[in-house]
Length: 263
Image 1 (cartoon, helix red, strand yellow):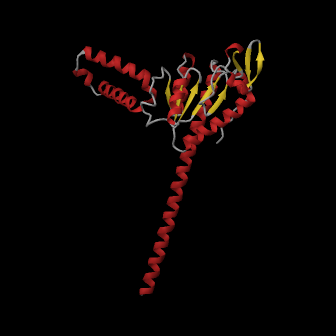
Image 2: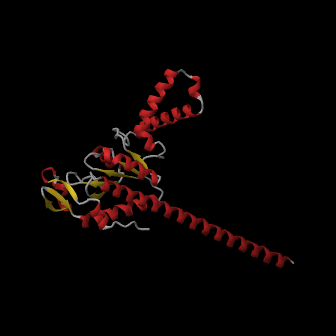
Image 3: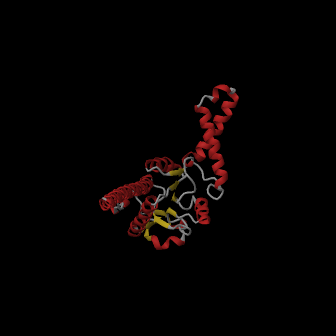
């Protein structure tokens, strides 16, 4: 199932509005249509094609059993990124990217284990057997860990790919992904460096409507990938059952023939 990117939606969301000309990154030149009133205008025909490529990659990745990590720590994107990542059963970092989040995954996983342990204590009655001061300290730690790691606490391992809003702001996440060979999908505004981004989505990274559009379509693509994976698994199960049934019939026929010959 191919997720469509409509030109009308890109226009309505203001995806074509880049940053002020004086703030541009020359590496974004191939994706700029022109300028208007001192603002760079992004070439939406290129955005549309590249966005479709990114969506196809997300769908295929998830269909193969992979998972996507949504990354957006700028204030106006946080709520959207959480909502859309969770809608498709993916994972997210929305508060702050901690250095080594992926390159030092073992340490991060230890912190996640600590978070889950505290959550278990809060739910199984352990809090009732310790002092109020100890409870307060553990709750403070739990909230801190939840804010930083809550969106990845159930992630089974390193992500198959990361989806980034604002390539310039999230340069540390992109650098870590590059180091580990993890594909990067990123919204790159006219002030961004597209180097290190495998699937570039040239576009406005500040508009709420634009951020919602990017995140919702990536989420749709992830869900389409899940549906494909489920359909393929059902098809394989059906094929196995059919083959098994044919084998049983064949065995019965051979057994019947042997009995006839013996008689």
